Length: 249
Image 1 (cartoon, rainbow, N blue to C red):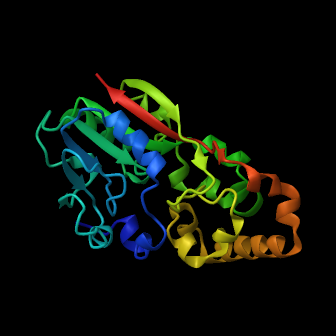
Image 2: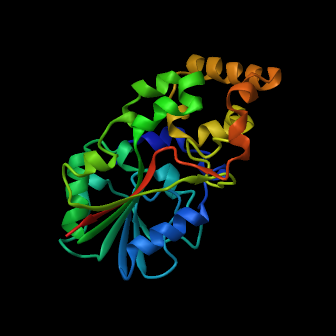
């Protein structure tokens, strides 16, 4: 299998990325009574249910090598060509992954081919315009191919039957270091390990990343960030566009 994006940017993924238990609870509820689950774009195993027969699908050897011993058995494959027969599992799970697929529409059809129910944790990139990390420091994120529309509910609905969409507000003490995890803890975003675990930052050109990082560091030191956004530090949660999406027949 050819090299994938995460073979390049995922080498230190497990330093900052781990299961956020409140998201996991919502995922497990959406999976319901599914006994056989295929976790597609499984990465290092976050959000894999402890119950049921789970098989992971992950294209990146770098990510597979970071999976812990307790994680589900994994098959190296891509979403667009799942090596499983029709209706072979009860549900598919896809967490923070659709925006990395080469052909999202084909991948979505594959999820529907192997299971009657599909559960996604994804995001609506239109929220980026109002998120300070993007608007104030890294507007170049808008130009990345990860900011396409197919990962949002509207994009998924072009291919699959969307049954429900639920907001996933990010709690103030979120522990999974995804892009908007630290919306109220800006100091985290100048940490190279945190940046490496966030694909939209890891994919920026080095000079762009350095420039935005230095501006954020300066604004933290001067108090400018707190003057503009300090009210966020006292919020319990924030809706920054993450969504739980359930599709199927």
